[in-house]
Image (tube, rainbow, N blue to C red; front, side, top):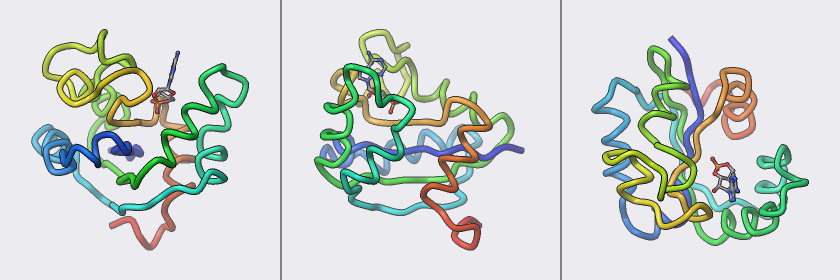
Length: 137
Ligand code: CMP
């Protein structure tokens, strides 16, 4: 059993597809163990994506992530990190397999609907960034 962090990004929240995205997780064996809707500050977004701070897209990424509310979730299940990434599809929606969340709901590589932890170690850090232990059921 693993836990991983998922973020429904501002583009998908604005489109009104929170429920449709959550259904992808729940219908594919990922339980929602924690969930909240939050508006990130610039400071939050910079800290969360600090690993990308030297990439050319960093400032655009931060601006996008603070452009509206996001939904953050802890997903739990067998092989949850890899399963979530399979359900999301490729980072660039143009390369995402049909039927994945990004193929169905994302616009482009910046507004790409969802974020998911890319390793078990990062999942632990990302979950701790957003949730106290008592908030995860
Ligand atoms: P995410 O999985 O949230 O992780 C970092 C984000 O940076 C990524 O999704 C994309 O939305 C965004 N991004 C923009 N350009 C790139 C790029 N060239 N490579 C990777 N991520 C990018």
